[in-house]
Every structure is written in structure tokens, then in C-alpha cells.
Image 1 (tube, rainbow, N blue to C red):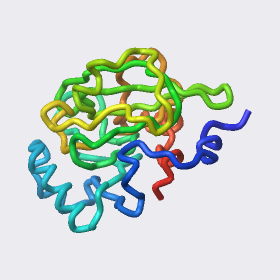
Image 2 (cartoon, rainbow, N blue to C red; image 1 turned 180 degrees about the vertical axis):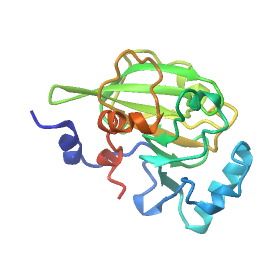
Image 3 (tube, rainbow, N blue to C red; image 1 turned 90 degrees about the vertical axis):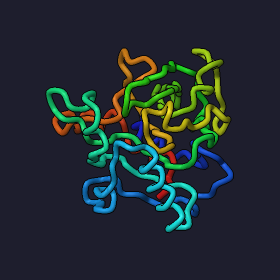
Image 4 (tube, rainbow, N blue to C red; image 1 turned 60 degrees about the vertical axis):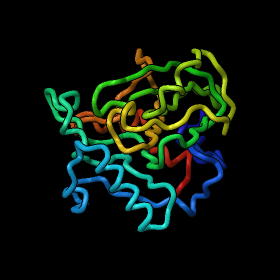
Length: 223
């Protein structure tokens, strides 16, 4: 059986936000502690963070800022949910930063596995998880920081085709208090998780999560 990561490499023309925006209008963003400009911000203030993102996009003449897979971040220090026995500060999804209301698309054909409003500070907010099958292999994609409207009429088992609009992005009042963005993550083994799955891990668990949650750019091929 061909490894799932290799199957991802064979797939083409996959987008998870507004299909009218070409990848030429995407720009990478660094949200790690090495970004000294970010360190000057009050990261607990969603409006200040959103202004930072908008200024970054304007400066780079882009519509989408992307990145964050396997990136250490200080964004989670404000929440006790990420700082219990061991700090969880390594991001294991891909973030796509763009304005609230942007259409979110199903990456591939799949059915709704689960959805939930994860409404703690610095959490996902409204979240949808799709279940997919390729060559008899099952895996999942997670879409976090959505609008509340995205989960009001959806049902478990609903089927979405590749590229079909799944949701819209939420704003800071519902998305965990962040600047608007999509957290997109691939999950091989979801275990008993429902409507939620860790998007940030600790250093001691990093090897497991990098294996179980491959780089989403294998699918999207932004760069």
C-alpha cells in the first residue's frame, strides 16, 4: 500500500479558501519568537494582532499570509489551556490569514466526521472535521476558527465535494480571540476526538504529532 503522504503528493489543484485567489497572492509569514516585530505587539489584543496581519499583507501586496507548520509560537502563553504540565507551543497545522467571512472550501471529497464550538480563549472557535478516503486509507482534515453560522445547520455525515464551500471564517468574537484565519490540519488517526483535535503540541510529543499530522502543504502545494 502506498504511504498516505505519497498519495498526497499525487493530488493536484487543492485549495481550502476562496478559490479566486491565486497562490501568487499568498505570502509566507513568520509568527515564531524570531519575528522581532511580532514581539513588540500585545498578542492578547485581537484587534492589534489583526492590524499587524493587515499591515503585513499590504506591505507584501498579498491577500493571504500562510505558514506555521512545526513553528514554535508565543501566541499561546495567554491561555492556561496550553500551559499545564508541559508548555504546548509548537503549531502542527497550517494557518491561512485573511479577512473574516472568507469562504472555506473542502480540501477533498469527504463527509462530516464531527463539528463543535470550541469556545475557550485561544481555542479553535467553531470547528469542522471532515473524513476522507483515498485508496482505502482513511484520514481527516480539520478546519478551525470558523464563523458560528458555519456550524448552525451542518450535520454529521453531510457530504462535501472537493472545492465545495464548507464554511466561512469567523472574527475574533467567536474564533478564540484571534485575527481571522483558517487553521487547516491533516490527521491520520483521530482516535476518540470529536469536533476537536490538538493543533499545538509540546516538544516531548512533537515526533508523534508530526507523524500523525503531516504538513498540510503536501496537499495544498502553496510552496
